Image (cartoon, rainbow, N blue to C red; front, side, top):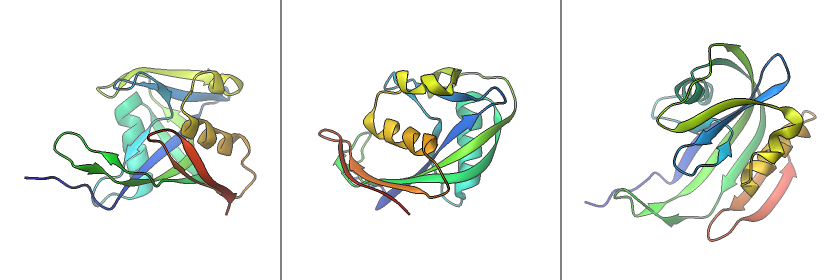
Length: 163
């Protein structure tokens, strides 16, 4: 039986800052790249609870969710996996977060969790969509950054504007 994703995958990520103005990064176990922690929103879950859960699962820490800074749409689709025929478009909500408590750890999804000085983060993240989302954080002045892009077959930023 063919499995189908919903029309849109809804996901969240959080740029978590600690009291030393360092940013939390995780190394994705599957792609072996540094990224901002986050993931898919589950059925019946709101965006904030999903982000708190995802960061706890991936890093072991507790956070508070602060501001929505970026909404991005990956409007490309590509071949599926694990019985799914197509991976649909994805809508990602990016938030700022503050560290509350806990010790960093790894998980099934993360091979590393670490605090990085804010000015060094762009030396770690390499995927163009992550770079654009982190720049939205660096340049945040009260308006939400909206991005539309595709990642396959190659990255293409189609739209970038403040809303």
